[in-house]
Image 1 (cartoon, rainbow, N blue to C red):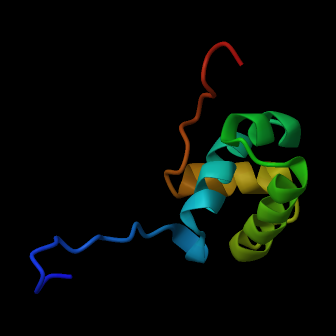
Image 2 (image 1 turned 90 degrees about the vertical axis):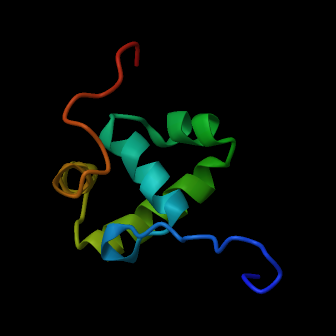
Amino acid sequence: LLAAGHPARRRASFPAGLTAREAEVLRLLAGGGSNREIARALSISEKTVRNHVEHIYAKAGVTNRTGAGLFALEHGITSAFPAAGR
């Protein structure tokens, strides 16, 4: 691509090997979103959210949403305060 004059696309790096989508799910989860709310926000099914959450738990080495939320805070994926109006 560089030879063709196209700029190289830089891939974002997330902790514990999370994908961009997993990081997005984690951000919403850490903000207090339920699987249903996350699914609606991302226009995906609840089953897909559950799959992402399972992968997040495995990659982050946690077993529940609280642990995942702490992981997100420790790695700058979310702020300490969820968005207002939730």
